Length: 444
Image (cartoon, rainbow, N blue to C red):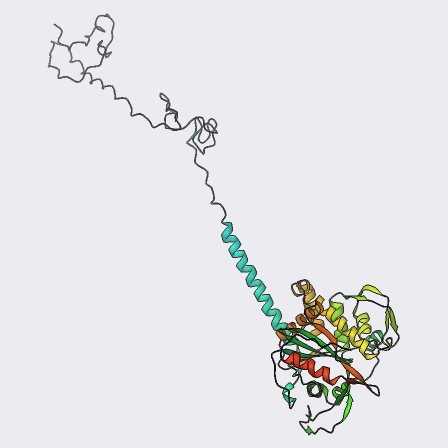
């Protein structure tokens, strides 16, 4: 009697096969679940070990997610059924290196997405760069301003000038070129044809009136016939009365320096001088050389042995030596001092036009040598700032550019070798400047 459950075999083999199929299980098409077995004791035979129940077939795995419309691969145990996407570059996981045995490819560990840096923030970089640049420019400009300001020689005290005319809306400068040989060697004096006279005298004088209606540059011949007014001595402080003495204008400077010259110009014109600027021979030549020369258009050839001038007609660039000879020449012209002042105006306007340009102001390789060459020999009044000096140059540039008037002071005749001013025209000219009107007065 077979006491084994249906579908199991006895000692002699698989049911219905006659073989020794111990432990082969049931011949049923599906495995059976666990069932309770009755205890059967056969005589003398050991109890056959009870077979463990056949595990049930596990349920089909949950469907894997699909990426890019490609179904996951089944039946592989080497990473193909992990949800990886095939058909991407590298044959592996997106971002992997692909290839067999490598990251992201068959046979290797899953690939790791490459670390990417965020794109540069150019707006922020440009903003920071702009701030740095502006700060550097400001620091340089401030440093340059204080450096240049400290080199200005503020030696003229206009508070010593007495009985001054009324103030007006214009800023009026008295610009003086002196024959000072200060700082010049014997070789310099010979080269520049300056001679070796002691002391200093005025070689050229100009009034520059910077007004809202336009700028006016007026040359004052040094041979002008003027009255020396009452004045206070610049050194002694002593008051000298007006004695009605008439002399050449440059004698005022020789007698008591810049303060008496300003007092004399104010007394004879009626214009109030706000600032004084004076430069000597050496400083003038050094500025021109620092600029690399000044271009001039000379309409007519001339030569002067005393000044060293020897020029051909036409456009040419004058160096410091040639420029000084050009503005000092007087004996080569029939008109003597009047023709010389015209040349001085023309050159000074060209000098200002070339100095007050971005090519000079924004170029440290030209700005610093030019300022260093000129400021060491430039003498100004105590109240004149570097800003006032720059405004003076820009006003001169405006005159040269046609925005103002350039003229000699009107002359009516002469008294001996002195040039007599046209009193009526001078009064009209002064009135137009004081009222900030456009200047219509002309020279003879």
